[in-house]
Image: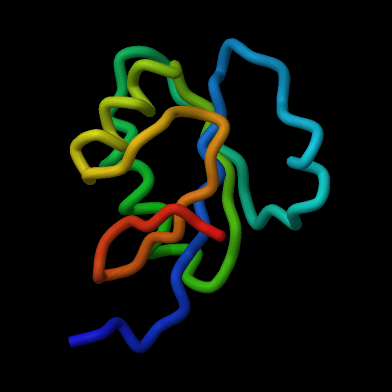
Length: 93
C-alpha cells in the first residue's frame, strides 16, 4: 500500500565538507550533526517520522552516509537529498 503521508526530505551532508551552495534554498525544520561512529540510517528513519512533510539536514561522516545509502539500494554520497516515507528512501527530484 502506498504511504498516504507526505514524505520527509532528508538533506545528507558530509560533516567534514563545506555546505553546498544550494543548501540555503531549503527551509530546514531541523539540523543534526552526528559523530562517528553513527547509524545514519536509524537517525534518518527516526527523524523522518518526526518531520513528515518537512525538510531536515543531517551532517555525518561521508562513509557513514554512503553505507546508509547502499543499505537502502541508493547510489551516491553526500551532499544529497532523499525523500523518506514508509515506502522507503528515494532520491529527491
